[in-house]
Length: 427
Ligand code: GDP
Ligand code: IMO
Ligand code: MG
Image 1 (cartoon, helix red, strand yellow):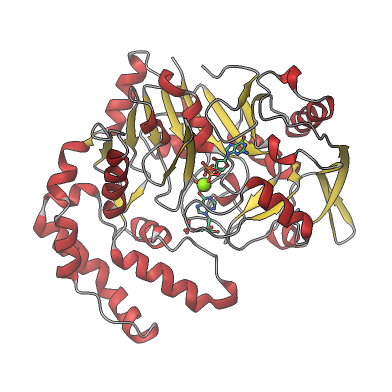
Image 2 (tube, helix red, strand yellow):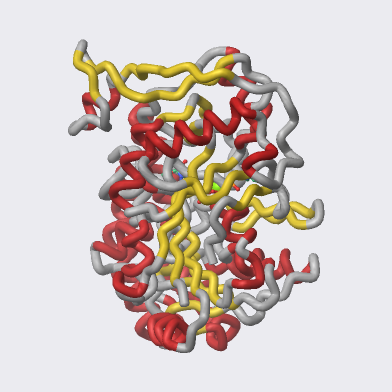
């Protein structure tokens, strides 16, 4: 039975949450494998809107076990407030499980995230300020704290002291901030220990046994291919590996067990934070897309930068993640344009590129080459079959499929669970 990975094909906010939720009660385990509460996944069920940051979207289906893998960085305050917020709305999260190896985001990671961004000035990344980057930096630097450290108070105290030793010098002498007391941090973290303890499991054992037993495991990506620290538009990226391969690393499930990789691509392009985005529209058209698509960040409320669909961006993700399927979201947002451009190439210093250029400098200077397709005016939000779509919308979808070299298996025509067209069922 299948293990499916859902991955963002652009710069995030493609609608991964909705795509995950839509597979519904057929999913037995829904796994977050990378990132932290920098993610914001919005799911609309029966007119109710849920914004999830750490818990996988599978939480909204009562039969699905929500899993937080070792690859995630966890802010325990956020986790528990998310669980409480859901409980207040009648959603039970008590069956959530978490890896003992997942790293912890502490208050000092958040402080460092914010001060380093301020220090970078114009060169800032535009992070979400949640402490995600500094927590991953500590992990790689081998001075991170893991969930299992909460169960040994003296080890935790030692590790917090070690992690803060250099940081306090930096904070006080370079950033002109006050010193952070290790004992206070350790005490706060320890206050979560007994609450998290019953949720801690060996995620690798759990998921491999589930797959052996024929269960359906869905890995819900956060962020996206082009925000990946290895494959994205570095340094304007997040600090983890959102790509499909990250699902294996971040959960302890081997690559040969993955059956399908579903790329989630918006029918146009958005990006939050800094970094190159060749098709960005800085004029009234960009504002029109933002309004129609309600393109404001789920996590920070920031305006999302908006532009036309960039086929080179999605094609790159399709190749590197080996997409078996694409779920094209928010097609309804494009209703009402007379012409809809698709970026099919770039001009860089007078040279045409049919795929993303080799270097970041070239990408920064990429000028899109557009192909213009005819738009449609009909409201498509009630369409449930491909053939219900206006002819021009069908042509648009078919052209994207051709350019991105992966079959489009689903189309989003609205934010609600049922507002989708299923072309090939994923399960
Ligand atoms: P994620 O981070 O990839 O899960 O995406 P977000 O939830 O941050 O952003 C996607 C936004 O688009 C959310 O507000 C969704 O409710 C909404 N959405 C998802 N799919 C569709 C769709 O097909 N049409 C429309 N109009 N909205 C959608
Ligand atoms: P979902 O899962 C969109 C962006 C930030 C910033 C960069 C680094 O909802 O698609 P970070 O706080 O991770 O160090 O910020 O990455 N970013 C996202 N953009 N959607 C996300 O998640 C994002 N998570 C991080 O805006 O540019
Ligand atoms: Mg989002």
